[in-house]
Image (cartoon, rainbow, N blue to C red):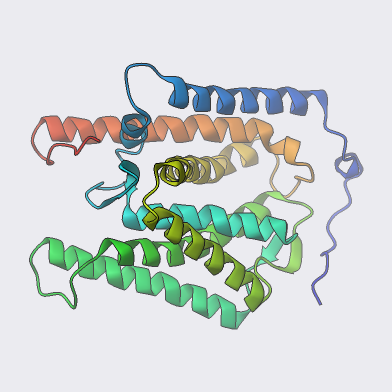
Length: 283
C-alpha cells in the first residue's frame, strides 16, 4: 500500500503558512514569468514565430520543425513531442495526487517507459544515419519523430520529478509511485494522441498555443533542474514542505535557464555567421 513515509520532525516547517519572505519571492517570480510572457506576446517588430524560433535556437538543429496551420514550431518534431509529453505527464501526475511521489512507477510500467525511450533513441540514430547518407533501416519521417519524442518525454518528466522530490522535499512520499497504474499511463498516452491530432488538424488556433507550450516546457525543465543547486545552497535540501519555499531558488533557476538559452542561441548564431553551421531557416 502506498503511504506517506515518516520524516524528521522540524516544528517550524510543519506550519503551512508562508513567510513574508516567501511571499515576496513568490511575487517576484510571478512578476518575472508574467513579464516574460507579455514580452514574448507583445514584442513589436517581430512575430511570435520568430521570437520562439530564436529563443530556442540553441536547443536543437531546428531542421525538422513541425509546421501546423502555417505556424512553424520552435523545435524539431522530436523535441516538440518530448516537451509536450513532458508537460502532459507532469499534469497527469499532479492531477492524480502524485506530485510528492518518491518512487518511479512499478517495474512493468517502468520497463514500458524505458522501452519508449529506447525506441526514441533508435529512431534518432536511424535519422542521424540518414542525414549523413549512411545505411539506415527506414526513411525518417516527422510523424515518427514526434511520436517517439512523446514516448521519451514521459520518462524525462518522471525522472526530473523524482530528483526534485527526493533532493528537496521533506514530505516526499517514499512509497508513492509517480505513475501507479496502467490507467494513468493510458491517460498520458491518450492526451498525447489528442495533441498529435491537434497538430495534424493543421489549424492555426491549435498550433500557436502548442508551439508556445513547447518553449514553456523547455524553460520550465531547465529552471527546475537549475534551481537544485541554489536550493541546496540556501539550506533547503530535504526540508521543503511548502511550495512557496521554492520561490527564491526557482527565481534563480529561471534566471539561470534564460541566461543559458540566450548563451546557446548567441553561440549558434555566431557559428552560423562564421559559416561553420548552415544559415537558420527563419519562419
